[in-house]
Amino acid sequence: EIVLTQSPGTLSLSPGERATLSCRASQSVSSIYLGWYQQKPGQAPRLLIYGASSRATGIPDRFSGGGSGTDFTLTISRLEPEDFAVYYCQQYGYSPYNFGQGTKLEIK
Amino acid sequence: EVQMVESGGGVIRPGGSLRLSCAASGFTFDDYGMSWVRQAPGKGLEWVSTINWNGDSTVYGDSVKGRFTISRDNAKNSLFLQMNSLRAGDTALYYCARVRSNSGKGSFDYWGQGTLVTVSS
View 1 (cartoon, one colour):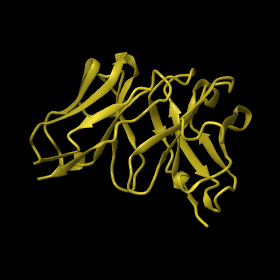
View 2: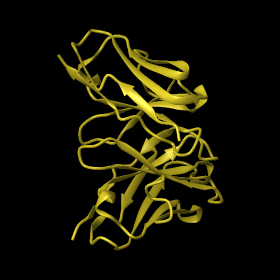
View 3: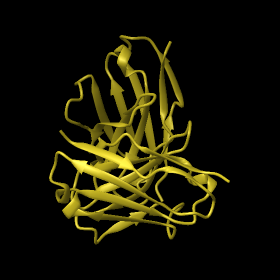
View 4: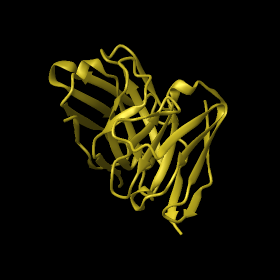
């Protein structure tokens, strides 16, 4: 079973700043099987990034993903007020298709 | 417009059974794998199960294996989750999600709004 560990647990930043979220896998994951999701309170998750670095339909280009092997990152280049939410990574290449525990991005 | 609408949630006693449904529209249903993901109150996302496009390949999370069964009816554009031997730990909002591949190995690109299952005596 591949365990995903996200850090930090909570990230406090101001609008306009750059956010870097980390997702570390307990064993190597093929980049094509790593995704990132955003979830706002009371809403369903939304796919941001698939294949580690490809933006999903309609996702602004301030969101970017990178990494390989066991270390992956989600970067938000300049935070907008609507970006403050919880972010999850997920690997979907090897069952169980686990999610990380999430990073809460909050307004400083 | 792609849409998934879950139904079938409710309050159920421990040991009981429940069948969730997900009605899909706005896309060619049998071109995609489908999944169930749950979220306990105030907690993170937990993957539950995934089925491929024609139903002949299914996978489950360890916490539900042997108790839950995923299935689909492509003629009715519907996904199901049969949940047996329910426990308090199964209490969660259950989401239906489309998988970005027909094999079931893909990211989850569209989600429903969820149906709430509460297991309580």
